Length: 372
View (cartoon, rainbow, N blue to C red):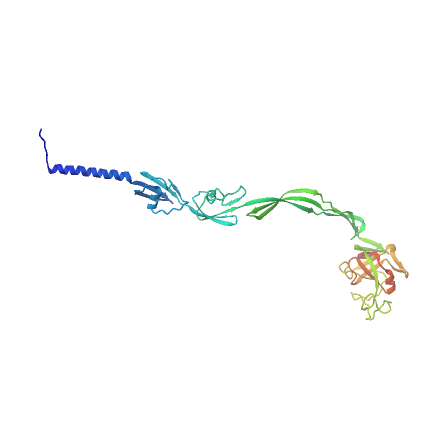
């Protein structure tokens, strides 16, 4: 058997070429076996790279993405890379949530306001107010308000004031009134709902009323008689007053009024002989031209007012005889003790005034005087 061996240069070149091809193929196989092609999508940007990294977190670090724990990565950072891998990154955004009297800062990838609240670990009830609303799209650097809404019911006793009804009565004079029915307040219970925002009352509404006692109207009759006829005169009146009357004298010398060591009279003090209006303090005759003089409370009867006095029985009799009868009187004086429904009648003699005492008298406030 014949063995052939050659050392031709062509043979060695061919052998070297084959070995080189095999090494290149091995290198290519090794390259394709260990390198990965990765595409990363984040904030509208796309990153592409070929890497030897083994996991998602490693390749993200390679491209220099600084991530927060709240950022959302798909597939998860712990997952191994495949030959061809697409990675999506949603960056968390900062939010400020105002709630329960304080503020909470939170980073969230939530698409809606409700997601952000859940990421902050906050719970809410149906009546609570969330601004913006729960279904609104979340946006970075945005404030969210969570208002705690609660309510309570209370009961309140309410007084219902009675009304006053006035009815004309043709048998009464102007200014006179007669009580027909007394008034009585009613009562009801209100149920009030108070709404609270973060424990602060913001709204109160009456949601029901329960009547306990109905109000009863007060009924008054008022007089309509506008004139009286006396001594052939038709006297128009604006009102009538039933008052208590007393009497006094001018206190001047000759009146018989006691005078103290200072020279002050019992009735008028330092006597001047004139009334508060400057009229001479002389007893009148009760006529239209010479009326009686009376002291009044100017808040009830203005000074200068012409009146007509009507006594029970038409006159007053004392130990001095008939001292005064029905007639005209002029409000021309005042007195420190004359307040409210009270008048003081001037007499020339102190003792006549003294024995007059205190008596009821009807005072007509005169508007006009005409012959019948």
